[in-house]
Length: 234
Image 1 (cartoon, rainbow, N blue to C red):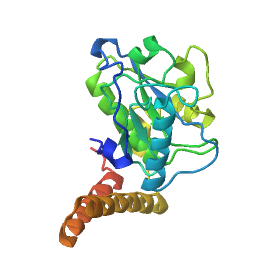
Image 2: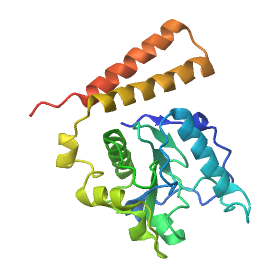
Image 3: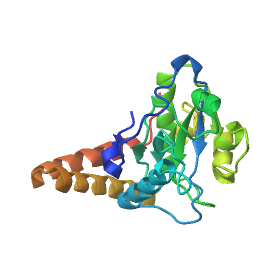
């Protein structure tokens, strides 16, 4: 189960009236996106939150400076630290895939990667779990596709590296890659640091004692250790 950061974690604007919820029987897949932001890497929680606000502003602001949409276009974002961010949410129709028909048939997951930036093992693992959650809601959701495959007018999104990972099955729940996924010490430290940043934000932003903060931190470290410990053959 993915622990999704709420919209308040990135300071989202209130969404306007939009397309509403997806129809379960119509959904057939998930489209994977990138923001096309050049080579800048967004690592910290605050950097990703700021970027999400910027993309939402562009999507919601009126034309000609924006798109004039009801909300940020995507349903969920996943960053390089493996954090999952609630955008529209898994049940709300996206505005990202190209037209109304494709938006009704496909979800939209945003990977926060730049041009030439390889998704980390943490990003891949979390994206796979987000897709697993999506498939639990929409039983006909069998396809995992790059945005370039479903957009009628064509696009380079989500880049060659992500397209290759999709083709390899890296984002598909229940594959051999999922069982074999390993993390380096550096990647584990990055995930720990990401968790600590989030709990620090919660401590100072929502109150609590130092003891409560340490309890939450201990729980986060246990969760990470469990997630990266190689599973024993059954």
